[in-house]
Image (cartoon, rainbow, N blue to C red; front, top):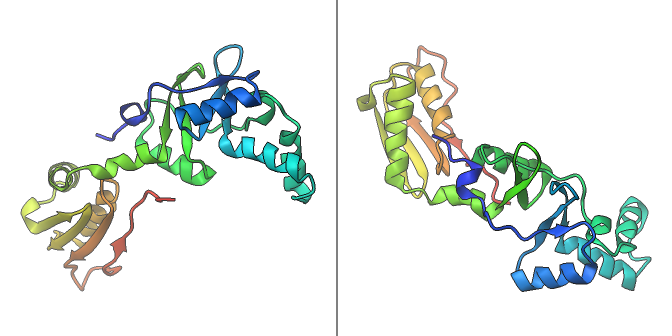
Length: 228
């Protein structure tokens, strides 16, 4: 079963109201040693997120108003004039639900180039926050657990393949597959599905494929989660 966001998220979240002042936010970032926090509106729903970068933008452009030109300058200059969380926040917030998988959270972080995701319920209320470090925690999974899931749930459970035909070695999350799958297609399916087992860093495909069947060749599959 896939790990959900609920299992890895931080429940105690530091947040601010949209009328929180610049000074309050700067002090909160330093006091709690965090780099961003969600902004809640009047209905206690997440309406934005303020990062230390947003606060630094104001400080930088206040000191050097002509330091940045073009579109970026106009966007950042607007923030530089702000004095509250509502002025400085990024309103296009990417969120996840507690029931979403860790894999979905990782894909959202990668696609939107963000370091953290507020976790919200069906009404948009804040229930937690998940960071890149939280997402990467699935790679702490013991090698023995990974091997057992591949054998019992992927090879035997889903593909109904004889587990004796495929040898599985897992070392530091790197899976090496050797042996003789019943068909080439089953071999390729095993490799594809092993990619999605939690904790797998890479897959080394050393299976023996039959020459008379279509063979796309041996290949190594990289981790599906980008580190940065």
